[in-house]
Image (tube, rainbow, N blue to C red):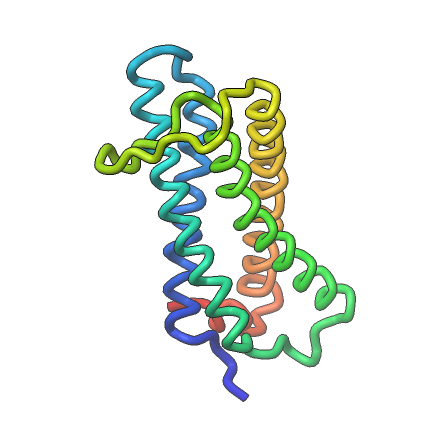
Length: 175
């Protein structure tokens, strides 16, 4: 049995970690950009473009994860930690899929569509419906809050294992 993730899994983990943290920060930044301003339109399209790019990487990561077993968790790990680690990872994947999905669907029930990095225009495939948009955009924002909490828990657990337990668990995913 190997004791580390594959190089591809490690690369996807860290690329997505940085991208997702930046995307979440950008999402919160958007709350401070005045609605209807040209600046907001540019930032929103940038956010959507990054979201689509991250979604493609998330699909790749999920496909990799489903076809490559992760290294086993330490046998000495308490049962509650095993359950917590597996639940947190599963919920992180739910958020990784749910965030871009709800954002994409919400966008398609507005009149704006997506201008992918200003290069390709993806017109909306839904009708301009404020209620449907609000439902999916609301779900997108709720998932963002849940995602941040799960990420903080994930980082806290990694730091616990690296600094307190010193059990080498972090080395499994460290480049």
